[in-house]
Image (cartoon, rainbow, N blue to C red; front, side, top):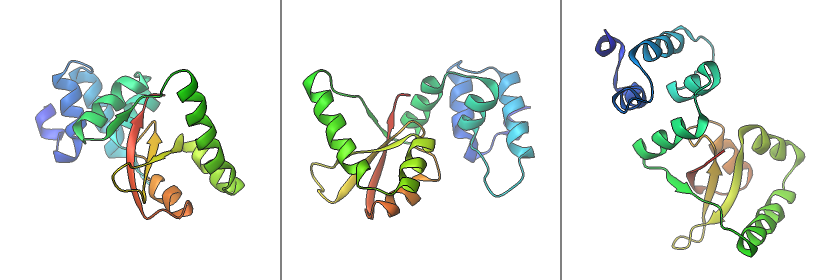
Length: 152
């Protein structure tokens, strides 16, 4: 029955099921909820599992990051962490209140610029599949960007 409802857009559901993170019953419920969603914004299966079924956010989105090849960021420690925080604050403080609110709501931070491509912004997001990320990047005036996963 699961194979009938699972299509290529639900690769994450199949992966989570195969790894034993979710069971068949939970996958069926989540797929049904996803299929029943109406409106402009449809959530992906990972978002549904976290928001509606209280699965651990970091567990689910780490698997999403692995499947879709999002880089996983880890914060530095000690003085390097303080420096990273200051750099992020400088960028965020230059933005509008509306953009700050968007970044806060969607838990997205301008993390750094790529070392190889200096004009490519790396955005740290707890949900790298969030459809608001391109809007945030555009508002930051960065056309080249990479979404990376950061644990909640």
